[in-house]
Image (tube, rainbow, N blue to C red; front, side):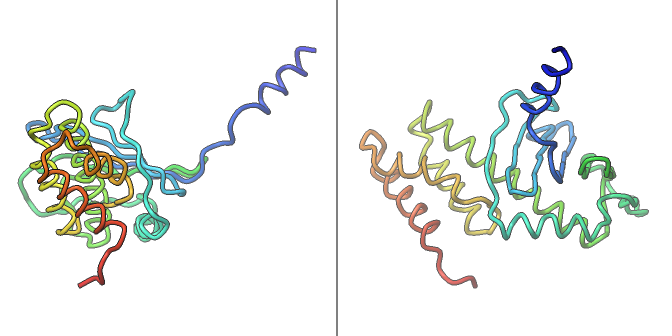
Length: 206
């Protein structure tokens, strides 16, 4: 019976994870000093500010966003080759790219890379980080500092207008809550409604 129970337990375990990308930046003195992001092939992302964050921020990239990020990783050979530039530049934090897909793994660390594809992929993850920071700040002020909500919304709108945000749908629940709650200032409610409308009905790209 013991082997039967073992088989039943094994059958109950989730399937092995598919392809997964990891990015981290370790830069003491910056804010945040450390962050990491994981992204799977379905677009599920997790953001944390420690290596063992027990409550990571979760969001979901669109199919097009996910495809582009994984496409860049593929162009880089899934991180089997060095990316560090031979140029002498200031320390800007240790970046780590990692790819995992079962037995297939690749990892590379660098401070600064001249590789255009690596820089494009880094920019995607930096945009994810900015997206997470904007959401964290909006949720924090909405809950604990309502006078700070207008500024948090202004920062969110600025990042959005500079095309620095991804997974825009993640903001809609909080924006709708602010827009419909009369306990927030009118300026905050109006701006939240404006941003939510821009997310739902984006204009043509410039």
